[in-house]
Length: 144
Image 1 (cartoon, one colour):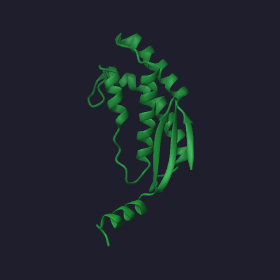
Image 2: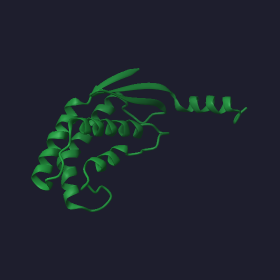
Image 3: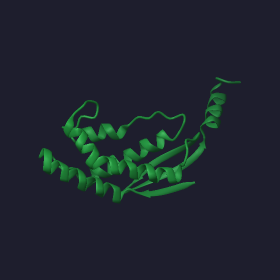
Image 4: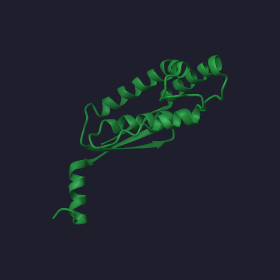
């Protein structure tokens, strides 16, 4: 099964909310459409990974967010960062969770692959991880 999810609307909402906050509070560099699409895609990818029992939750979107917004502090108490997260990010994160839960409603052993294609994300369901792991270990001679 494959599913295409449009990221454009969420990325646009994120860009408008982020740039309004930055103009009002920080007077820092504004986010571009491409940066917002990338952050939203990485947030979606992290959310998909969190649905798979075997996958690590890397939170790559947080690294990209901190790279794009130099004043943002996600790992410490910082009032401006907390306000930004509430105003700009929370609604986007909820929207992504809703989209992912429509496709992957519960945690799973299935392998899901995400790929960004322009302003869309392609989600592809692969094999059961346990079967793939057994096949890999058998081929490598680890299990006989």
